[in-house]
Image 1 (cartoon, rainbow, N blue to C red):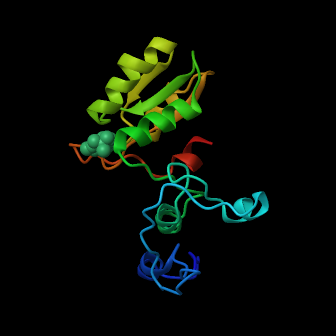
Image 2 (image 1 turned 90 degrees about the vertical axis):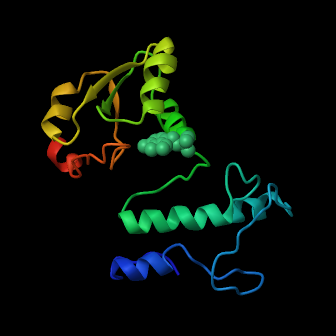
Length: 169
Ligand SMILES: Cc1ncc(COP(=O)(O)O)c(C=O)c1O
């Protein structure tokens, strides 16, 4: 069973991303506590897609699929901590001398990693009130590579504007 646009939110909450366990038939996804996986062959590995749990784990995959279905997104990645997610996202998407627009109410760790660590490699940051898409539009530069928000913000619970993609395009 996977996410389906025809299903209501509560149905997707329960069903999205959940597939019966192929070994036992268990309806709910088991918690796979393994780090590594037996590899019978390269072809079977490519089909299953799991080699090491840091890069992929069936329990985490089920959670990612469920979040994607609930948010109606293109995909999701789950991390063990918030700052792992933040750091990995920013470092994975920008290079030196690129520009990032961030919400003015980002978590303190997000502010520190961008202005005290990644700035040493030339990252440029603008902090704007992302509740209003016009502020984001005004901050865009030729070298802007990423618009980063946390919503609801911690600790202010301020919300970012949700439909930027259509507003800014
Ligand atoms: C918005 C936000 N980002 C990042 C973090 C950091 O999370 P962690 O302590 O799991 O690294 C927090 C923690 O409260 C948070 O609220």
